[in-house]
Image (cartoon, rainbow, N blue to C red; front, side, top):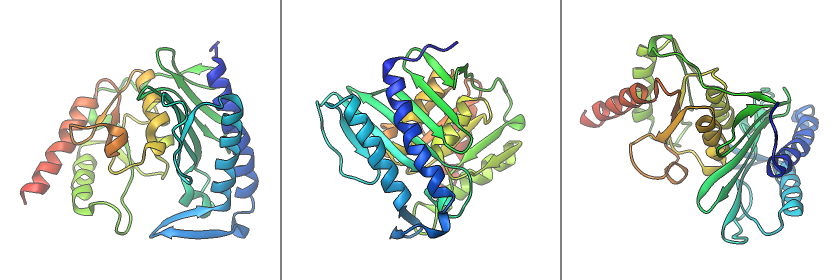
Length: 269
């Protein structure tokens, strides 16, 4: 049985409390007050309420820690510890009544992610990891998939929308992966995509231009489940660039090579 630290208990409790509010609001999604932030980028009252709940709970438990949150300004705190929070990853799914979204909370200490929780309220799936202690869903240990062939693999991705991202570059990568794998999936929540790689449901995941709160917790889950993560373009800090490649230990290198080759071909044309 998994032994949770006090830190994970704090994070999980905050995620669950926010999740209860999201479940209530999801049941009344048609009546939500929604304001448009930008093209295909929305913020709902559910988002804001969940973020307030999480902040209140985390500040109560660890008053000196800083915050990086999707919907509000960052705070420095003690300069060493920072919560990185997405109160509702998969907002567009949520607003369209699609039951696939999550709460994501990570703790960054001295520039390194040391703990993460990804919680899917509707299925009550609680993915969590702490550096050096493994990754779990509830009390079950997670391990990335053991598949060794791209031809047998299912790979997840995120598709750029409207004027967000370089569509031709992305389409080249999609074309390459489609041609070499058993299937590509796009479900609309990067946090859950990474959790599913950690759980062995997907063999890999790639996406461009993500935000730290989308991926911080999920990256740790993959690493602690025995997988690998890297900056998709080959250099830089993943949290800063948002270009993510995550895969099991057998397919990280071949998937990365396939993606980079496709991008080089697109650039040459």
